[in-house]
Amino acid sequence: MEIILLKDVKGIGKKGESKTVSDGYASNFLIPKGLAVKKTAESLDNLKKEQAAEAKKQEDLKNLALENKSKLESLVLEYKAKSQADHSMAGSISTKEIEKDLLAKYNIVIDKRKFLDKFQLNQFGYTNLRIELYKGVVATIRIHITEDK
Image (tube, rainbow, N blue to C red):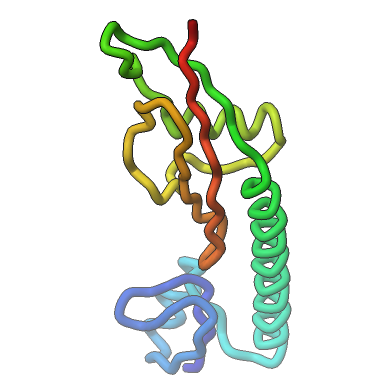
């Protein structure tokens, strides 16, 4: 029986692929569990519509990422931190804090796990952080940390 996979199935194939499997496997396991549908003209049309919708969604996400990249690269985030007796910074600025500031001040949503640079922001001065906004779209944001007096 020819089927179209609705989800990835280990040992069979990936979502959207058309495969030939035994009749029993298809009708007793794959179709009842919602992992596949029988290959018909209607199911092929549905698959093409879903693929077109997914391509449109990915294109919109990439355009949003490019828009956010231009915004991020034009701004500098300012932070104040306390200093210790030897004029080194007490504590550090976390990526979670940067994420919250970007959302609150600039309405830019970024997941803290998208930061490519995994070092601590624990020195005064300017620092550049790279953020992967989308596959292949990397923005660099400038962070300025000054001494709180």
